Every structure is written in C-alpha cells, then in structure tokens.
Length: 112
Length: 113
Image 1 (tube, each protein chain N blue to C red):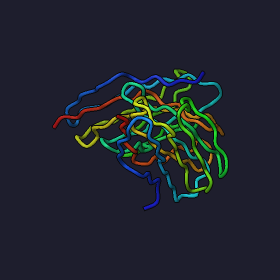
Image 2 (cartoon, rainbow over the protein chains, first blue to last red; image 1 turned 90 degrees about the vertical axis):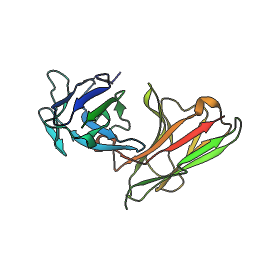
Image 3 (cartoon, one colour; image 1 turned 90 degrees about the horizontal axis):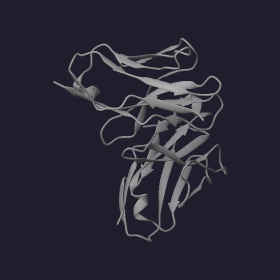
C-alpha cells in the first residue's frame, strides 16, 4: 500500500542554519504531496504542497520539490529561526482520493 | 475566523463513561475526518465523511462512532471509554478530495482514567 517515510528526529539546529528534512514515498498513480507543520499545543497546518512531478511547493521560506524519479519530497529552508521549532509531517494523497497518508513526523528544535 | 473548531479542548473521563466530541467547520467543505495522535504512532484515521449523511471507517474505528447530520458538523462518540482511548483527537476538513489538503482543528486532549 501507499506509505510515507521521513527522517527520524529530533533535528537540532542553530538559528540561521540550513534545514533539510528527508521524505520518500511509495504510491500507486500520481499522488499530491504535502508538508504539514504542527507547533506545540496546536493542530497541523498545511505548509506547502505539490501536485505533479517537478512542481516546487513553497511557503514562509520553506521549499520542497516533487521528484518522481527518486520518489522524494524533501523539505528545505535556507535559514531557520527559533520560531520554526515544530513537528513537520510529510504526507501524500491520491487524486480524487478520500484519505491522506502521513509520515511519522520529524521534530525540529532551533537554538538561538 | 473561518476554520475548524473542536470542542471541548480538554476532557478527563472515567473508564466506561461516554462522551461526544464536536467538530464544526464554516468553510462549506464536503469532506471531514477524525484522527487520533499518539506518541510514536503518528496520525491514525478513525472515521471520515465525504458528505452530509455519509460516514466511513478509517484505520482504527473500533470503540468509536460518528455522525454527519449537518454538512458543517462531524461528531465523534465514545460509548464506553477505555484507557487505550487516551489520546489527542484532531478533526480535519477538505473542500473536495484529500488531494486538496486539509484544514485541521486545534485538537481535543482526552484522558481516560
């Protein structure tokens, strides 16, 4: 079945460091791919999405590119801030489908 | 503010008690979902609905029931709570299919003692 695998955390970075969180997926068909972010004590928020191969999703300085050849959707940010500390979830959903498959989440700590 | 509202935010139940969690959305979304989030388990789908009057089982439906009598509301019921149902429950909605992305509520933290 469909699945999402993302790197285990926690990831600890200093402020202004470069961030990469790896995500790979297994899916039939051509799914849409997502990154969600969960700040402490809150629900998940949609951070960015990409709907087809080579699309780049971006928001708030975060980027991810839909790589069909490597079945990956890695999250990157050039310069992280303390306020980026959160749990990040990679996810996929098939076109017209009812359900989203979530990865296990990666916790990010950013130190001042 | 538009979005998904969950009530209550916190609740403590005794084993065997019942309760209903309410989810309300004001975005006219067709699809609604209930998830539970547990440490080390990620998000697991309990039940979902693809429109008013419809419901379907997700990955972990046992011990829960749901109803979608009105398009804007999706209720999750626990008839006889068990300690294994201690969790954080999230409601989500999407305008059409899941590939449109979800809007989540802020969660209900439930403890069953």
